[in-house]
Image 1 (cartoon, rainbow, N blue to C red):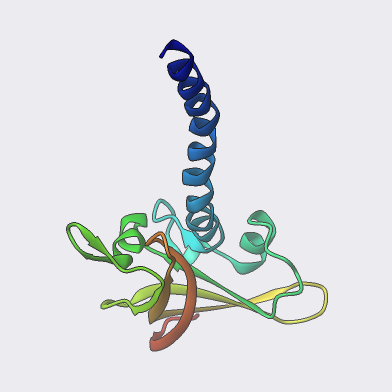
Image 2: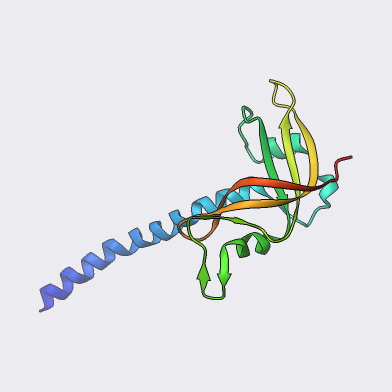
Length: 146
């Protein structure tokens, strides 16, 4: 009996770190999405500039465009929530409200970008673990570029 408990304890000790890695790895796409696309509301939207953001966030220079979303982080979290206890998984969801969007479009081969600001509806992808992991489409509501 003691040897069985010892073996079971050893097995659980080996599996516990793996469970932690699994949970952490499932949120990597969520964290990466937020790092690459979310703009904090601590700054004014007008202060954000594409060239600075693309360099600071480490976005590859060969991308033709990149989208940033200016909103409170919890509004993105709630995109994949159906109701209190249920979440959308592995589906595309159109947000029911528009976001302030900064779309950075590459101007030249040197990696310079032009800023396009708008209010747009966004279609997000909810991953299998029910967190936003991608932007699939946008519908322009109003152009607010200078």
